[in-house]
Length: 135
Image: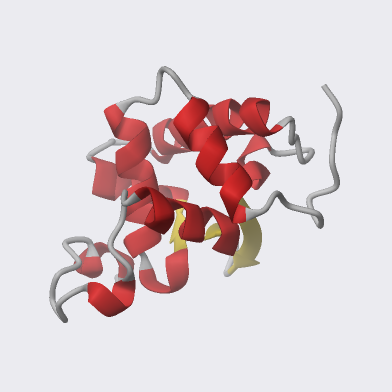
């Protein structure tokens, strides 16, 4: 499978098609995307995602998100190295912890699919994960 530089990500309509083409998209995959989308500035850590998903360990969240990224990457024929998760996010290390920033193209695809509600359409206190993200 060819590797495409992560500086050249797919466009949102390609993500839409990729998500639609995944036959075995699980409920927890959709939940991961929704939680990440709702995070402040669409930025989350593995620990925050694990807590929001009800997992006891951040490694579980990391593994689940990585599997989803691999599925999407296969549909896109897009494989940014070295992390499969780079298919969906960019990475930033802050205070010794990696933060995952949801790509704008993925965010737009999730909105186009109707899987998330755009922030401007939400009520002020609608985010159920606000407490987790602000800790």
